[in-house]
Length: 421
Image (cartoon, rainbow, N blue to C red):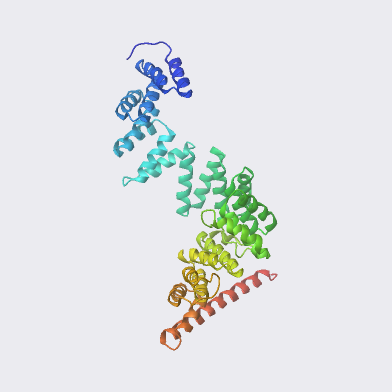
């Protein structure tokens, strides 16, 4: 034990004041005086200063002294230093000791460590213990794991606990998504609206999608506009699709253009069939597929105004990501105009040039192999007169018939639902 300097808490306070004013050297003098007198806060603050300037051995000594008194802040410091040196067993030991003393952050940190290493096993238990004590991250992890396993009732319980424990819009959105997934659109609207009115941009987009599904396209547009105005790319895409359905192509293209320039177009919900309104199953459609569709629409709009370079750029982005319609559109563009390189070399931008048939055919083949009927018809024409041409023709006819049967089945189902019992 060092020299008794009286009120060590006051000494630590002088150090904190010095640090806040930018005088780190003076702060260290005060912290060291308090630490030498046995003050745990002084030890931790001095250790942190040592850690920040790279004096890790001294930092470890001071954290160690504080930890012997049962201080969990010091245990966190020791675990942090151990992780920095890749001494994961030591880090785990200190997190466990702090967690066993009821430290909420240590429980989550221990679970994260176990989850990230091959020694995972009881991470779920620690996440649950941290979640029981109200830790937001642990609550989020438990909810996500339960959703992934299809345990939606249990996931809903934890999401509700997250709302109660934190009041965070994140958990309201999670709860809304769970309810929407099981068809409870009224419940989904309630929670998405609460989060959206609290200013959560993601919730605004989710609320708009629920409103579309309930047939309230007018209010949905208002929320899409709010989210889009706040920079949410998926809301820009969703809003654009609603506008395309209304025939307001010019404004739709402006939003699609902004979305495309905002780090890649994303669409949370499949709104291409927004009119008539989406049913609850629309919430399960693949986000990636919808995002590709936005790019294809943007490419078609660009091509319609003879901006061939931009159209090719959009089609290529979606085609490279696996969208078969984009592959077909890209093949057609290459057939008529060639590639951007071809057009540049011919010095005739936006005008027909000798097509690069090999590249176009490669895209038609990829689209056809992915099930696109129009690409199959194109391949049957390109390879006409041979067995492969006839094969693609037969496949195209079969694909068209399958599409027709699906459409008839859907129409019959809608008629049956509309017929009074």
